Length: 462
Image 1 (cartoon, helix red, strand yellow):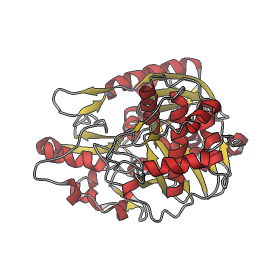
Image 2: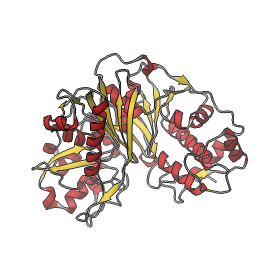
Image 3: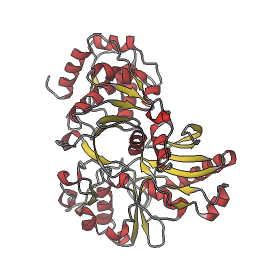
Image 4: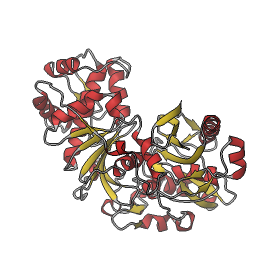
């Protein structure tokens, strides 16, 4: 029997089939492109095209494999609002929208304090609470027809099963709607008047129900194919490690469009809103202190500035030359997010480099190192798929942090494997879930001094 995972990242969408051992045996991928709607003045997600692609991909997978379970992982900061007739009340907003402001109204007045939600005040639509607040203020008559608030993974669960559920990793992902330390809704839920529109929370490990009968017939799926509640993608990656035999504290580095450092077993004290630190909520409902930035996007921008593609080889020799020549990539390359989001100058570097990907890799390692320090992170550091895509990133971090061991899981996609693990319930997982390979530190001369100089530039101390 096989499991199908539908993984929607901000940049790419994947469909994957995993076998009983959690190994990926089949994949399809497409680009995730935003769209616009002439009736509304904000960018949106093309859920109709994604739905067509999902059904086509599921049907193709079912022709080759006997699919008995489906789970969904998606990026955060995304919500679908349904009307009483179970249609989308508004297009699904793309969080990379402009500032959501209303004349004479201030979201800051209505949003709960950071100390309660551990959700920073973020730009654009990165706080789901702000999205809902803006839609209510801007389209009050339309908003009055609201029936259901579905977070993005659970929107697809509903499309597949007809069941309405909520799940804690999406609810607790910088939405302003959840108090992770109290395990309850924040005051914003009642302020927005959406208490009755939020479906009940369900266990991340328990199935919601089977695929709708007619849909299952159309896609060639068994009527007993069960759908699970879905998961926020970075928490899917984290679930992969929570399913191992690791003991906390430990740290997981989740990579993609966003690079998120998650400090498991850290008490979460002294999180700094100004540094884009927050607490996500794991699949067990526990708050997890995090620091993050748009690592994938910043990697691309540094490569663009250097005039190279992102697949150019990364070498220790090129990194050594960058350090010897004292070329520094100074953040932020993506404004409004990350630990240096308040820097007045945009990301830049001075000088020339032979390898833009090497400069970008060095930059990511310094950013991750800084975020681990902000979190006062203890215990080992774990990477998933990044170890295969860019092993020097892991090796540089091992050299920067000799006091901590760095491990890799050698997963092709930790998010997909984590989503798969949630469909196993309490079953014993394969031994490779606890089989990690230690990373040997890079041997770069002058890296420690370079790190100190880079940090001064990043902090504006030079």
